[in-house]
Image (cartoon, rainbow, N blue to C red; front, side, top):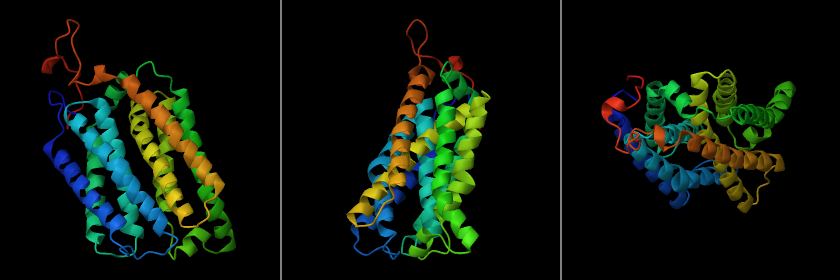
Length: 296
């Protein structure tokens, strides 16, 4: 967020608005057009659960966060980035894993829109601003949560991957879905879980980027946990078996991440938002009084 300009640059706003429109349309088509998805039956409940969570939770939160981020709210900016990360993960999965359908170009458009927005948004974020805003917050619960999340999810996925690797076979979940490999395993083991470990390490060392990554990844963790639980509901309705460890791990993940996220956002507080901060005499903060932030 640049010094003297607390609103988001117009390209970020336009990209986010286009993301909301395209993702909203894609989820509505997926949920309400009968037989639209051509994927294996075992995958369909997961896709429907993902679409529902995106439509009723992720996109409304993304829109509200975008509004406040554009007004200079640091809390809004963090949530906006975190939900964009969720949408990036979602449509990367759709672009690489879903059976080809008429929305393929929508998925690839959402992939690059959310990727460019996420990378640009992270570059524009001033980590020292987040660190100052969260000053006094105990980092131990956040370090422990991120490490525990990485360990538990890695254990769940490797419990299928390692036996199949040793036996020279294909993990059951991949074989049942008739996929060449699991995009979810690849994204989680290759990107998401290492990001949580790195974030925990930086936060333990009290580095500014540790505070910034933790804030954004907590939003991602909350949406990830809720998405998996929503998928599980659709799977159970379809008569599929859902492993109890998966329900337990992602249930705890969702609850813990929401609780920690709420505490983190409260620690940032409205005083750190240029649009709501005030001077000691109660008057609004002027442009020259606002904290300097990293330039674009």
